[in-house]
Length: 603
Image (tube, rainbow, N blue to C red; front, side, top):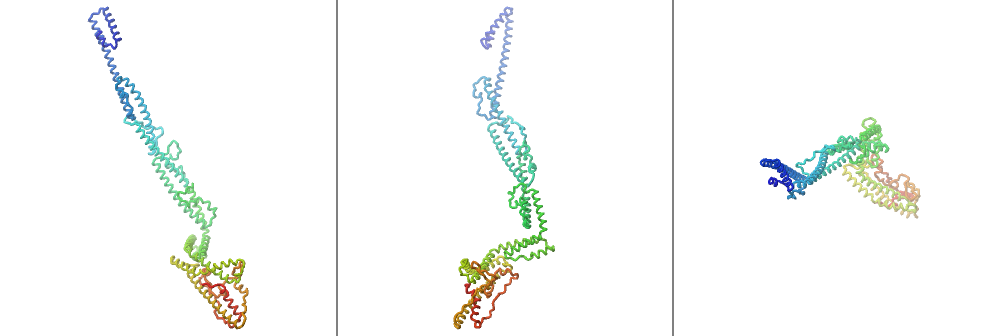
């Protein structure tokens, strides 16, 4: 018994206790008087029962070890899975670092904190992924055209086959930032579109709230809980609305410009006061603006256009009642322009004919007015093309005026007296003589310019109905005749001097010629205070009318038929110097040629 019990004792104390109990049991059996066979049988039973207890304990311990090993293995596997999912590859398991560790409980105790830490990291990482994924899907939904409610949670990420590493989290964050930037850009673009719609609606006088609500209700921002829609459909709707509003703006601008042009025309025709025009200054202000510059609120509203249209209708009715007066006024303006430019006006719209046609109803006053307007435009264009030649004509006429003044000045006996203003007249006379010498060249140049103009325009250059080249040709002829008359007068003066010399030799002393101031007075000139001469009666081009009158465009202007004036000449009958007394002959020739002697001949 002791041999059986000794090797099974777990310790010396347990063995001592069993031996004491066994001796006490044998003593009891001896006292009882049990036989040896019964003692052996009971000892075998006792040994068998002890073996059963040991076996049961061993099985229980083996099962506990298996469970511990399974738990350690499961936790190690979970740690490995979590490390792979979280990307924590740099963390090493205590089991791997302490391979010589024999106790499973120590292994379990060492791996449990690591597993708890990894589980906590996983929960935090999952929460981060869930938040980012919710934001990504929400923004993606807004861009795609549908919205998630703020409290809606999308499906969470499952652990299987999921990558929860920082690398993937960074990818999600980068994608989220990209979507956030795209959302910001889209919101900014939507705001620009909304502002443009607001501006166009203001200019056109349309309801902005209704217009923008037709595109998408969220654009009104009435419901703050509903975010602004930034989908492609909203962009397309806004672009379509803006294009439609711009087309409407372009149409209304053109319509209002046409109305403004009619207003300006009617105002100018009827001399409308500026006060009445200022009432429609907003409507007419777009006449000089480009389309993008029209930004004033309400300037293109239907009310504004209707008011301007009503004003056009009112003025049109008023114009119809005053059409005859307008026709006469525009005809008068045409005649004034023609008179200033020396162009013959069209006789088909003369005042008498226009009155007769309007009274008889043969012609519409509007058509007649349009005809006169066209004639005014034509005359203005023709005047512009004639400007260079007209300027040369003015230069020629000014030179002729200077020539006439010089002749008057030369006939003044007191021109050399030291009176007030005499030096001014002397300077002017010097300049006039230089100007007069240029007249032939001016005329020739004017003829050449006129002929070139006629060849270019393929029409005649008329000056108050007479061809300018004819006027200039006649002027050259009369000027040549005048020069010949002056030469003839000088020759007669020489003959007179010879006759006077012969008479003096026959009759004795030379008589003093009778020159009195009354002779100068009969020429029709009087002296001014400054010593210059002013004609008191219409002057003649030569004393006694011995030379022909120089013909200029002004002399043609007063004649309707364009014919020349008659040349007034003295009788060409020869004088009988013998029959004339000495004093009479002197007086006669003096009156004829005195003025020519005092003025130098012009070649």
